[in-house]
Length: 222
Image 1 (cartoon, rainbow, N blue to C red):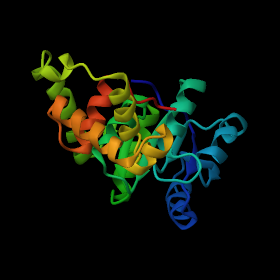
Image 2 (cartoon, rainbow, N blue to C red; image 1 turned 180 degrees about the horizontal axis):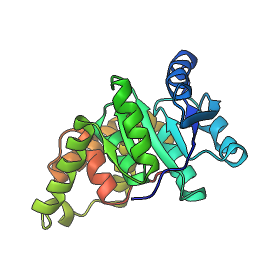
Image 3 (tube, helix red, strand yellow; image 1 turned 30 degrees about the vertical axis):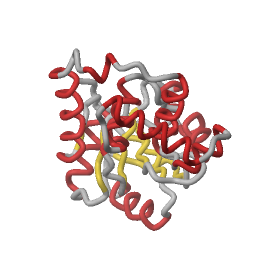
C-alpha cells in the first residue's frame, strides 16, 4: 500500500453547497487534510484538478451536467495516480459496480459516521479500497456470480445488434420512451425488444440487465 502525503489535498465535488460546506468543515479541522477547491459538478471539477493538483477527489454521483461516474472515468484516464472517493446518496448496485470498475477507491453513503469518513479518506489516499457493507455486498455478489456461472447460458445467448443497442441504452439509464426517441422507433417496438432481451437472458430486473451489460463491455465509463 502506498504511503500518504504529509498533507492530503482534497477537491470536493457536490452540487449541494450546504453538504460541501459540512464536509469541508470536517476536513479542514484535521491537521493533515486541506480542501484546495470545490466544484458543483463534474464539468466544473475537471479543469480544477490540473490547477489545484489534489491527491484525492471526493465526489457525489448524482449531479447535473457531468455526474460522478463520468467524472471518475475521465479523471482516472487523465490522472491515473489520482484517488477518487465517492460520498453519495445513491445506493444503487449498478452504480456501485460501475464506479468500482471505473477505478474509484472508495464508495460511502452520506449516512457514514464522521470518523469512518476520515479513516476511509486516509486509506484511499494510501492506495486502499473502502466500501461500505451494502456496496461491498453488491461487488461480491457480482464477483461470485461470475465465478459460479462461467458457462452460464447468459453468456452463450446471441442478442441481435438492435437488442444489444437497446440493452446498452437501458443500462445507461434511459426509459423506453428515451430509447424510442434515440433510435427512431415506436415505444411499442422498444418494449418488445426489452421483453425479448429479458427472455433471452432470463434476467427480469433492470439491475441484473445493467450488471450483464457491464460484464459484456456494452456500457462505457465516459
